[in-house]
Length: 376
Ligand SMILES: Cc1cc2nc3c(=O)[nH]c(=O)nc-3n(C[C@H](O)[C@H](O)[C@H](O)COP(=O)(O)OP(=O)(O)OC[C@H]3O[C@@H](n4cnc5c(N)ncnc54)[C@H](O)[C@@H]3O)c2cc1C
Image 1: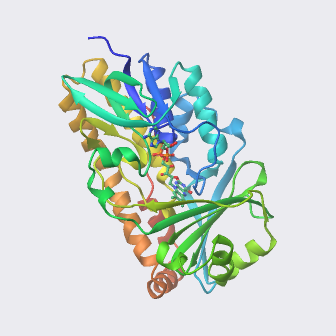
Image 2: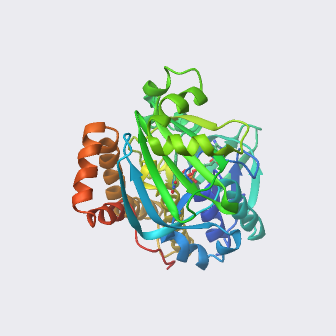
Image 3: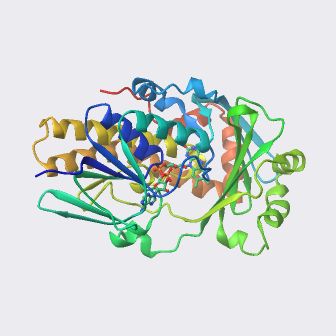
């Protein structure tokens, strides 16, 4: 049987683009379908853990050339302005999604990936062949499909995934600012109903990105009123927003962010990145997990095409197991920390305990991160 592609990838964010580069450089024929044009801004804290650097380097991706900020220190503040600081055990880099995704897109195109701007609306698997349909009416056949379409998509409805039936109360807001801010620090600041991350990306620009519960947000007319009346009760955020010059016409917002459990394999598709499971953003590990899951899927897919894995069900089983081994514990720790932080009493107790035992903070951060990744 002849296919349009060996592997079709749905979604060209970090997971989809990384997998496409990995697979195309191993001589597989890849089609990637992304609904938006590049480059574009995305709601994201834009702090990437260094755990993915060795792997990106092995794929020939020179992150240094993008001139990211280098982030080694962490500061956390409660609503009342009490703080705790620590070194970040592995450290990370700050890069805007505008630059990072576009860079990967250019690399994917030069690796031979065929990228189409379109929206996938349907995927069917029959007789060892996937047929993928898009909103422009095109269909593509492929031997395998990777689902890398992010946290929520029309496809989740079509696949009848369990999490999609429930509304999620979480909203994300992000904008870039010109402001003086330490170039090596990521900070996380609590406010009623959410938390806001601040850190530098390339060109000394500061990214402010927050996650908030809709119940806290809905009493206010707009983002500006909410920031002034709720975020600015935290003295650190008040100081930042009073002197920062916005670089966006208005902040970007997204809603319906769900942290519900998902499955890494659905209807024979290997799910990567947020499509397989989303870690709470305060862990600063979602992008690294997206890239890491792309690595896991790509290595197994290459083994499948080299016939080291004989059947598709072996491939699916191996991916499900590796995904759970790599990420299940991190996701659970993220859920536990988010519950503690969003309760003002528990968050103060946590801070006082960490102030008495400062060495525990890097250990807690480590629980939500992995080890440096080396390609096999
Ligand atoms: C408020 C907030 C702050 C965060 N801060 C951080 C942080 O500081 N550090 C960190 O590591 N992580 C952070 N994250 C998490 C991080 O943004 C995600 O984990 C990461 O973007 C996942 O990458 P992905 O490739 O899985 O998905 P995405 O980057 O969302 O890419 C999915 C792509 O699929 C496309 N798509 C969707 N549906 C279709 C379709 N049907 N057809 C075609 N294309 C489609 C979309 O347009 C999109 O480009 C944060 C998240 C939030 C919400």
